[in-house]
Length: 356
Image (cartoon, rainbow, N blue to C red; front, side, top):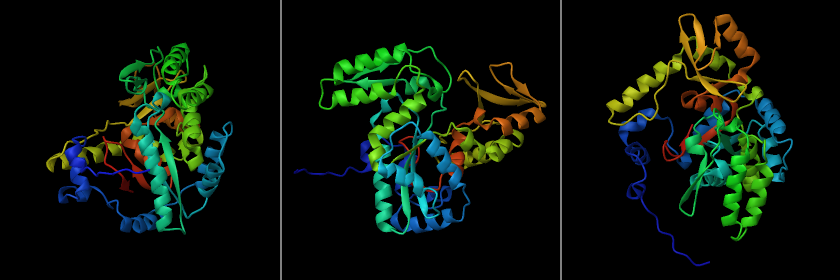
């Protein structure tokens, strides 16, 4: 195939914020906010630093084995799940919410970036293993952002009455109607019926969205060895009990985030996230994801009749860690606790590829 490739500087795309462009240009004003810049020579330092961290790799492997028990696994995927138990294996991770049918194209681009970057890192350091991971933000509750796609310029929406964590919502008649609508257009395209067959296989009525997304993304990328991680899992959440306890009892994260946000603003940038006093939600049995606030000696689940005193709250945390859901402030830290990450690939709203 003959083609001509033309590179376009990030600044000329008019698609990135000042903080992203300055980061890519290694602006001195930002250098105190990160440890390693993503370049080839930084990889060895990242590997060395991550090797010093203790992580429960067996627990991660057990969680993934259970997660995939009802899905077909390619040899590449099976191999990568096994490699995660070895201390010389590291992950190249991207994260995204479970947009229906993958949603925007950068959902796919970020995953392909992780796959290619894992291959590249292994070519540089063949004595180490690098596994691409898609970390699913299935506990987010923003259906307005996740519940639609654009097809031929038309916005098609999932008009469900369900609320709460999108990953825990289930495929209903409204979503099946949307699938019928999509098939009427793309079914006649090359490979269109193959894609629709897979959509119907995984988005069956009554299936929750995180399970459907897991199956569909595995169908699309499993042959590349991509590991999909669904963190809404009691075993994985058990790793973060001490983190969640500190957040509930001491609220350390809000002060750290506030100080960093102020430093960013003093340097001339707009902070992209601001913490709350408690950066945890409570996941109800009906799928609702409700904020936790402390009032006096009580921790209240807003929008419900549930409240805990200190003893009751700590008992609930130990018994049911999966009911506690980190927001954007704590999510990255939780991710680092369960994955041996050395590189994280963010989207356009966050900093680009960075070494942890």
